[in-house]
Image 1 (cartoon, one colour):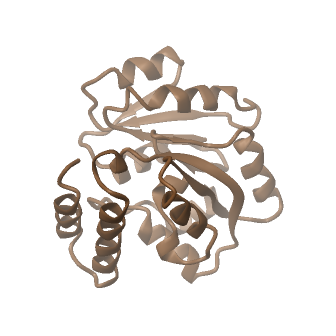
Image 2 (image 1 turned 180 degrees about the vertical axis):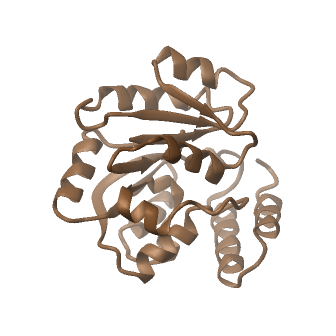
Length: 227
């Protein structure tokens, strides 16, 4: 099952849904858009693609992904952001990994940017460290693992990191699929490469120090105040 949290994603969502619909339906049996209260055409677009939509009572990506996971009974749960595009055949990549005994994993990242420095970010996602992980890489989990380490904590930012931390700390047979997922670099449209990386670094340092997630979110948006 593919679970897509959305909030006003009318511009980015169509290409992801096209990719999802192009996947082998015997391998990707369910697609769910978990919406956080969109006021644009997000819901209309999802229904145009005949995609199942569930609604959260507030905008919180973790809550939305949890609601999506709650209604899905499939063995594999695949969480992906609406502004990302998985590689062709992603469903087979994930299924093959699970058939080989992997219980969770993600793809490498490729930022949708012409900035040469973006290649540094892309390359770093090959590394096995927490600071090299992020929600834009998407995340798949088998149901037993999800029931063991889920759901996502309903925090304001970095909601995937507590899950990533458990995966890496507990050595849960993680698989980094050596193919890139294309991720929107819209943050870089109004902020320099270094401004975005500095904001990411500060957020990660605050996370490791156990700071409140509202404080982390406020600091992050303060550093990227142009967005």
